[in-house]
Image (tube, rainbow, N blue to C red; front, side, top):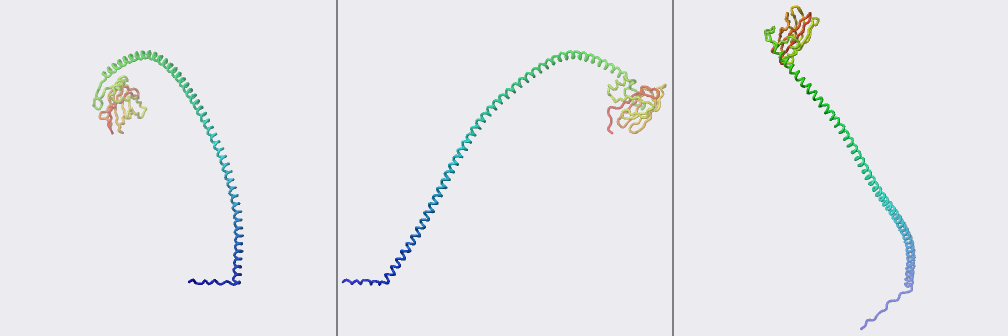
Length: 291
């Protein structure tokens, strides 16, 4: 069996009026919202349009700047290309000039070298001519020198022979100390022969009575008395700070005395006795002892 359906209760008029009022309020609110949203959308549209215009202006500026920059770069590139081309032309020109300068320098050096060679050849030819002339003159001088040498050899041989003869005539006698003397020279010629022989050191001297002391070799001698008629004399000798008196000695007598410098005696030989003057020589050993 079916169940009977009970219809809902119908609202009263007061409730219906309130619903209409609420509905009307909602419609008004929606209208206000719509107006507000419309105004916001319109403002946003205007802002978007302004932004698009600003962006478009900036894009335009960028494009113009890019175009200007590209034009400037193109001009700079063309200027660089022009400079590079100019540099290449200058380099080629400089290379050509350097090549020409090098060629001129080489030619100048070759010319100078040739002139120097010519001058050197002329100098050598002149010197060779002078050498030939000098050789000719030298040849003549050599012949003269050969003659002079031959003459000198003859003279030397003669002198040597005479020296040997003079030396052979020299004598050795006992001195005043009883020691056998060396060879005795009685004149200047024989003294020269003894010096040439070189066995001893020889110091010739001339003493006067006016002199106090005279240094002869490494000793000092003083003449104290002479007897011209008897060819006798007296002297004082200082050697090694010691004084020795030799009295009344005769011509060509070896007057001997010792020193600390030698084992064999020194010898004084007087060859001439004059008035207050004597002439002779001192003979000393070649080898002296270390003191």
